[in-house]
Image (cartoon, rainbow, N blue to C red):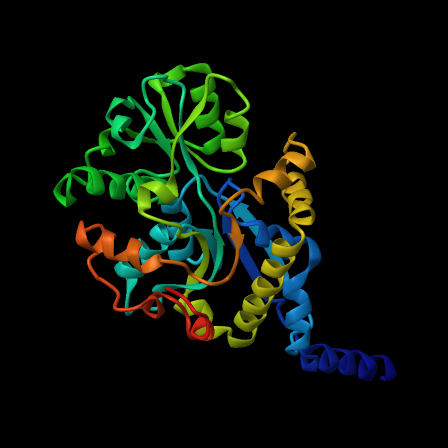
Amino acid sequence: MMRRAFAALGVVLAVGAPARAEVPEVRFARQYSMGYLQFNVIEHEHLIQKHAAALGIPEVKVSGVRFNGPASMNDALISDSVDIVGGSPNGMFTLWAKARGTPQEVRAITALVTLPYMITSNDPEIRTIADLGKCRKIPVPSVRVSSPAVTLQMAAARLYGIKEYNRFDAATVTMSPADATVALLTGSGDVNCVMALPPYMQQQLEHPNIHVVASSFDLAGGPTTYTVAYTSVRFHDRNPKLYQAVYEALNEATEIVRTDVRRAARYWIEDSNSKLTEDFVTAAGSGPGTEWTTVPLDTMKQAAFMAAIGTIKVKPASWKDYFFPEAYGLPGS
């Protein structure tokens, strides 16, 4: 009788006990260049967990995955396979315009960095922007939508007029920065020009037969934001406290990178399993024109250009159209 009573009590306790709440997760996605050092800092220093705890969220799982280009990252974001993406404004614009007004609409959280990347070449006859027509193959992270691809289109429009914006498109091929570097150094695959990103750009220029043709600042008509962090309206609206933790973590991580690039470089080397030295990566992340900042710089120029050539069907009226309200206090452009 007593045993039956205790057994019944055990059933009641088991049924009545509250289930352990599922730990929320933030899933990051980024590409292979150094334009996302904040993500490395956030993961190593547990900044989201820190800010989430201050907002009353005791546990958060943070994970990350890498992609070769913006198209596959955007697909993952749309399908809810990742939450926070690090990529070029151009890739973000494509998805913002396509999914605008739906739960899958994306907007930027913060900018990450303004930095120049370079067109490099192994061909001594290719020396200036005017020589780009001699480039046989130009590797980019993704044709037509990645930042290097759009920058080439902007250069063509400046040289030959807006109707000729796609003059160099036929030469572009999708290739990872690492593979593009190998192709340029070995002369394989008919590659004689590369849109080179840090730190691969610095690796290429260590070789005497590789030279700079032009910087992205030259091609685009001035400095502009290179990468942003972005997410879906769905994630922003359903997880207001978690989103706030992400926003604050990105701000803190940006300040860490700005003041201590070496610290961030160490994390990047570890996460990338890179053989590059800490000095080399630190120099690559703090070169001339590089500014680690959450403030978007001249992104409207890129968006307006993509709208003018029809890559996106909606022209934003302001940079605030494609950023979340938490960033509206920044002096963006």
